[in-house]
Length: 265
Image (cartoon, rainbow, N blue to C red; front, side, top):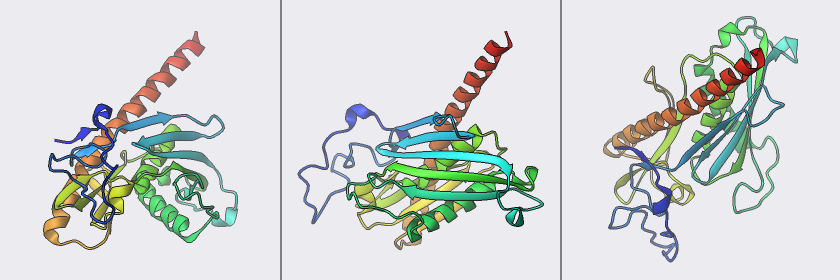
């Protein structure tokens, strides 16, 4: 059974461990941050966090924090690039210089950020009904405020919430999650230390109602016997994440309905 992390169990397991032979799962079955192998980090969602954007959201998974803003749909800035049958979607991904402990300056448009933005854009376009918005443009800006593993998945989740906040139609909600394999154990929702363990890591983006996988990526090689349980675990993590995101969307909808009801009086 998949569960969200109980903050009371988070301890200091990472302290005092040897970096030469780090044990990612203890004999008691606990991970470095106190979670069980099939347990996600605590997930928090907040929508409409930027008043000047058409849609915005803040998604947090443990210590990973990602902010997304959506501008549009609006008339395409460059008419020569506009599409007559669907909306033009542009996605920009960036990571703040203070997002990690390295404190190194990241230039805008570096190769890794451009590749990440392209992957996220392709995943989002499968969920958006862009055919209803021909000759328009939708700009999606994603900023990583704090990175502690699972950045790719958190960026997709934040962008989906921001798109929904902007009122752009979706075929289905889209949720992403990661899973890996360390110390002979499949692990759900890897943090930064676990991502550096060198084991296989699977990224999955799932449309839960359609049960359709729109993104599947894997870092490091894995046998079929290892890949299958890790992939299934990531799918379950997507469903758990989708449930939390759905609650955030419903909460935002109720808030808007209440605001409009008050304005109508």
